[in-house]
Image (cartoon, rainbow, N blue to C red; front, side, top):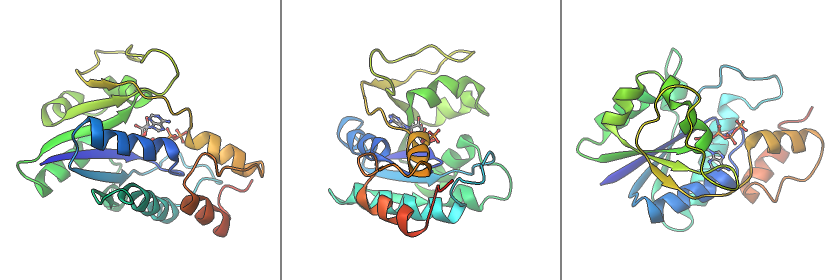
Length: 195
Ligand code: ATP
């Protein structure tokens, strides 16, 4: 079984996350997807709480599974007492699913930071890495310092970020073109991201 791990703050989840997960199922041969909500130590007062991010990640998983169930949400990182690191999450998933091939899904911006991640060498031993482009044009494979690990590179172009969604929502602008309807409804009913 090929199990993918996709971590993020999901503050909020958006169409880029959704498309990336569906794309990974088809093109990276993923059988099972674990969507893991990470801690956000740099949380601004207007950012969503851990509970809200977990709830919205569950809604994202429901959207992913609408085309056939293969994703599950994990709040394991949120439950850890200290800071959460990708290597710890991968070891946790490897212990949960012994014998599975693991693949880590990351956007181009995260990939370029990987040399700075804790135990980045160990990460590459534990899993394959699938990188999804984040800017129009050529996939940037220059690191922010250090050597980038070998990875599968996917040409991908969904120019949306959670930052943009938060900013639009704070300005009272529509966001429904950038996020699934269920998540837009959650943001509206919980009054999230209002300045
Ligand atoms: P923020 O704008 O708050 O930094 P974000 O949009 O980058 O948030 P995260 O939850 O931090 O969203 O991202 C989780 C993972 O998804 C990261 O690996 C990130 O690179 C990737 N990702 C997010 N949006 C896109 C996108 N539009 N295209 C490709 N990868 C993406």
